[in-house]
Amino acid sequence: MSKKKVLIVGGGYAGIAAANRLTRKSPEVEITLITAEPIFREKIRNHQVIAGTKGKDFQIRNLLNPKVSLIIQRVEKIFPKENKVLLNDGTTFEYDYLGYTAGMRAGDPGTKGINYFSVASFQDSERLRKELNNRPNAKITVLGGGLSGIEVATELAENYPNAKITLLDSDKIGKNFSSNAVLYMKEVLKNLHVNLIEGERGELLLEDKIKTSSGTEVLHDYCVISAGLVASDLGKNSGLESNKIGQVYLNEYMQVPEYSNIIGAGDAVKVPGEEYSYLRMACATALPMGIYLGERISSLMGNKSAIGQKPFELAYVGRCVSLGRKEGLFQFLNYDDSPKEKFWTGRLGAFVKELICKFTVFSFKAEKYFDFYAIPQPKEKDSVKQNERLATAEK
Image (tube, rainbow, N blue to C red; front, side, top):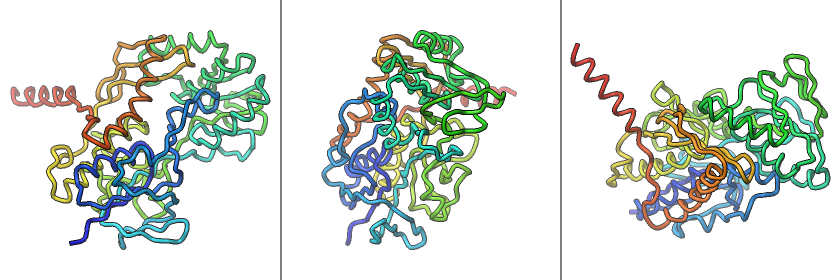
């Protein structure tokens, strides 16, 4: 009997984790990972790429179990009814199961100006780094005050002290942090002389300035876009049902409802419903989803999997943000991504952030040989449900 063929589309956090876990769980399977680049792009370090503080790169081949075949091509289209994919060189590959981990990309910022760069793009990040080497005193606007925006602003301010950095957000920064943690972040931004503008939307993006919703003009030499991220459009363009930002809809077993042999993970997918509404686009989501993907496919092929036979569940533990190389913040979380009051700051926060980044890559290497990464489970959620059942029973 011929081996089952599994294709994994995408060489990011979810894809690599899925390939390594599945290879060990189902040795009788032929696994191929297809991705456009041979280098693993640590997107959680793109702010360091911009500032020139990132360390070495990792070859995807070196992070994968040797039994996983690697193809460096771009998948142009999925044909779910025919169980095959089309690559950019015109070749096609058939599959029995497809792991959809195509990731995310930068959205259209509304301008095509050469002075605009997306933090979601490694190429843009690298291009801006080269520009700043020649213009260290530049005026830089960071559009979007989420985690990536804050990290870009602080990393640039620390490494280019003569540059004029503005962080612009349509709302308040730190929406998923405790109030005291937000105060700490603002204090660090102030100490680094970052001009923080909150509550003003960038209405008109021009080559050398942004006009805000209040009529203010924010001048810049360069603008870094850290808002408006969207999923890969591969699934949507292949006819898979998707939401408005291109995330393919899955059920609670991370399978495409119409095509149960397509299992997804990471930024490119979305599980509808209130129970999964708290899941966000992040490495902290993609990595455990990737582990589950591997376990789920193994379970579908008849292998024992305590993880894969149950619906996907995930509890967030913490949210970390680097504030330059010397400062950082680690926010403790409830399972549903809401902040607890506890958080760590300063060098400890920076150390934990760096440790988590290194832990991610180490997890890939360890997963080549044994089950290393454990998906955090929502114990608090179970306690809440139990209390609700008890309350109902008492009525």
